[in-house]
Structures are given as structure tokens and as C-alpha cells.
Length: 55
Image 1: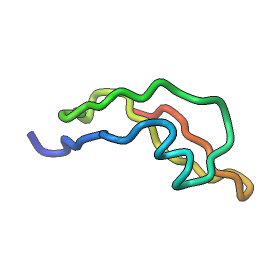
Image 2: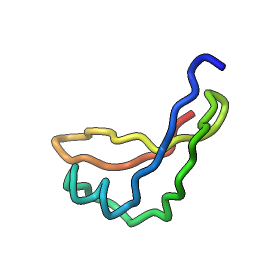
Image 3: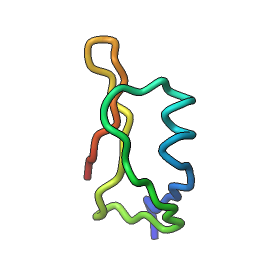
């Protein structure tokens, strides 16, 4: 079970907190994200913050 985490924030909460660029996403709460699942990650490119999918 090592490496599991939760994702509970909505797109609007994340957008407001990080002042993101990019298109809105339909973030759904997930209380058991496994290391093999795709997760939303905040990435900084050229000073702009954007949410990308990573695994």
C-alpha cells in the first residue's frame, strides 16, 4: 500500500490557489490514488503553472 495518496480538491480550488493557465478539468475526489494510476500534477514551464497528467 506504499505510495497511495488522496486527491480531494476541485478544479476551481486548485485554479484559485495556484493561478493556473490551461483548460479547466473535471477533477473528481479520489481517496485511494495508486502509483499505477494517472494523477494531475502542477508543472512549472517558463514561469507559468499548468496542470498535466502524469503517471
